[in-house]
Amino acid sequence: MKIIEDKFLPNHFVNRYENITIEFLKQHNISAVMTDLDNTLVAFDDRDPNDNVIKWVKTLEASNIKLLILSNGRQERVKAFAELHGIDYINSAKKPLLKNFHEGLKRLGTKKKNTVMVGDQLMTDVLGANRVGIRSILVIPVKEKDGWATYLNRRIERVIMKYFKKKNMITWED
Ligand SMILES: [Mg+2]
Image (cartoon, rainbow, N blue to C red; front, side, top):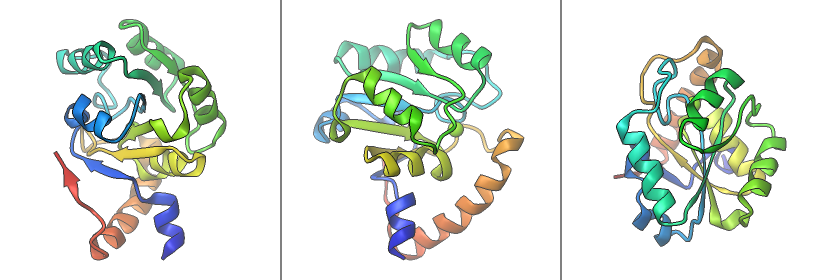
């Protein structure tokens, strides 16, 4: 069904954020990355960035790829994580609502076609990106366990992923 694809199909399926390399981004003309935090960069209950996250952030920085954390998480959590490494952030973003996707684009100062949203959820990250008209990359959640607020989203997501699978629309790139 076209409506499901329009709303929920990401442009790319990439196992982990670390596999989103500079080469990959350049190949797709991406100069700015908005990224989810919980279960995309770290487990939802993990407070601090680990060495791998820091390495990835530094790699993007070194190649002049702009980065912004767009998270539905609370301020204390997102701020503590982002400020430690000087990453710009928007907390309590209410994805998939569009307001903060627009705000994110404004802050990054990039065009939609050169901007990508990275996240682990179809119902928030990918839906918002598709609605606002930027590219999207779905990653596998860092941890299988989620916060309670995600329970319903995950149930719906499983149904949609089943549909994509049946239609052969899922190709994981690494
Ligand atoms: Mg997430």
